[in-house]
View (cartoon, helix red, strand yellow):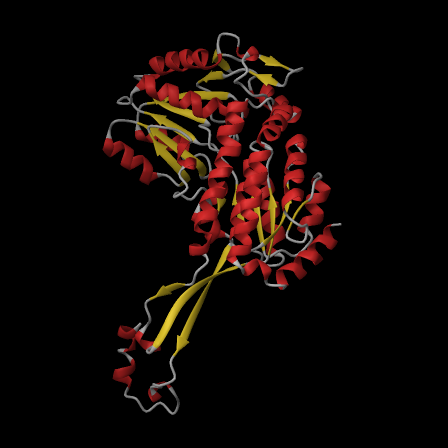
Length: 456
């Protein structure tokens, strides 16, 4: 089946139909209409997969996607135009421009934590740029995978966009084919496998991975507000968010106050009995649930720690001063468990943050502008925020992506179009002037040659 899809998409792309921006726009409009029509069904599928609250399903999955679609539909004609640039005097007289063009067949492999948004948002960018797409949703969110397949089948012919469902063996079969671009969202471990596979054909890739995102709270921060914003960013989607704060580094002088405010806000958000709250999701897979549950063994719990095997439920949990070598701290937590570590000096911050590879995000809560600037410039991370968490993903003008171990490439808004477009350089020379000095035999004095650099 995979080979057949690849062959039909090769033929469809060769037909040149996707190079027409109007053609792309019409299909994006159809996709938008179908998502609007199926919005309730999408929310139902997300709830069936891991009890994702409807508010979160709308706010973080369908509405973000609809905003991406609306923006692309509005601007695709402009984005697709050649972009004139200044000519070089070495090419005078000429007209020079950059022509965005599609790569060709794109493979998108999406994750289970935001299974709708993180499958469909890259698709919008790939289609806007004029590519054909094979989309592989996560098998770990089967209900959402089915609704994605239903939507795509209703909108696109398979030679244009196809959904291929299945597990690891399907991913392996897909990666065995030659693609012009691969977009992957998931773990760093699998990202390395994707990268190695892509290297066989020198295929460009975007890897959206993760990491241990630090959240720094200094002694000048507005503690009440910081606690509210941290609790929101950490426990939305039950902590299964690649941008969530992974651990807090709090100045020792305000640690006690921050802990108390975090507790108060958790209760305010979800009530005394969080398990009965309709606003708190569950772990998406039993394997991940068991790993998180085991990571709490032997830790000093400040709050929470309740687990339910039958429900794959882990309550919002605060962990006191875990060891940096502990199982809890060895990798990205990706769940509703928030370690709290105190610090007193910049060296303390360095010891923790630099212990881990580059993170996808970093957050700092402080009123000290000098400290804010120092932190934002001192560490390598994909993106971040000052005095808030996660919200930078909502600005379509900011590229979302990682660096180093947290990924490569950035998308959203026009950045998505640019990501899935090859920027072709073109020079159109005039014929009425042809300077003879560039041709052999080279009779021009050497002292003149040494001044050519001024013409570039």
